[in-house]
Image 1 (cartoon, rainbow, N blue to C red):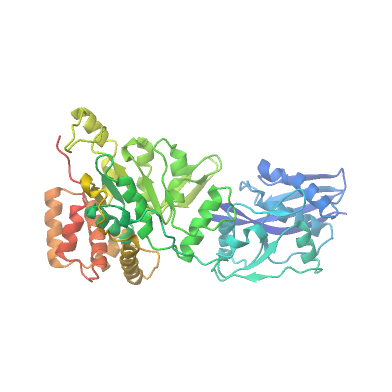
Image 2: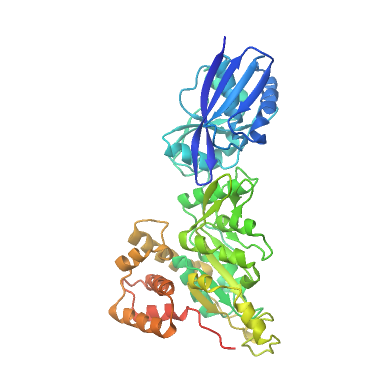
Length: 505
């Protein structure tokens, strides 16, 4: 006599996923557990975890030949999150529990029978909800993250015995219906890097305010010690706080990339990779693809200090995510898409020594300066909306008690501009930096004088079609900060000033 059962779990494929049927089949023969269905070593080791969990939970593991099939069998499975589903299928097939008719089982078993948190719980829940599943049995340690996903029903499980008692009806687990609010309210953080502590640099501060309001990419250029890094770090202090949808996306990415499977990300990310970082560390990938720095800075800031010192392939790899707001990681086994909607803030010096064009002596040869500046290609330069020269500060002003505008004050204007953009596009997460050409033609609203000024500047400066459209995006943000419906000549004039100018050597 043979016995069989089937329960369901989920395989996460980056920004997508699919349901997995966990089939258990028992026959007479030497006691053994065999797992098939394109499972890697982490999944295959589940049989040892299950033996320990059954023993320590005082449950009977049938002394039969147990075959576990993970279907569809042509999709790789590389997660320990199938443990709970496999153990439950054995309980059902052996007649110890009734069949589970509805719901997804997710969780990793410890040898003592407790259930551990798993990586990427939010992505699994979103996939299940998209496929029409409403009930999810998840580790209790993942509950805080899972509560961020709205309109689902959660059953927090602490151990294998919990699911056994629930399925048999002995001690039912209390269902939790989510609203998407999470266990704690998201709040804006007060940062130590505040604009009020930065002396001078009014032009750079103004540019960063525009960048924050419209999510525009920025390149800060200037000699060493002028405060470029300090300005970049202060940018996050004027960004709006994460909303629930953004927190959901960011938390999921950090869960995939880090060992902290139960943390909720409540602040906008600020990632600052070193220029010696590998391409995979920044772009993402690996044998089992994981998000890189550009995805971990999603909905936040990617700060690349000393931009020309990064590897040329790493810099060029930014082209796709800067345009499409996603990164496609293609490997032999699979192709995974990760979100990468970030504000790039890069810094550079005018030359290798850093003092070309300043009052200090520059020791660089013309060839060295040209070679240094060419490390950033034209296509990347074209994708950076705003180029700001950061000038040196007069020393006797550094300890001045002159009041500087605080980040809190600037942030209020940024949030007001973002609110106008949300109303315009009907999407709380869309900014002027995300505008397509169709959006620009439809809602750009250039005054005739501003359009004439732009056309004259484009012809004189010989800017590309991409730079032309990006100038309109920046001008639209300046107009939003100015609380005007139309882009006026003064807005367009300021936007054009942020385009890069060639340096004569």
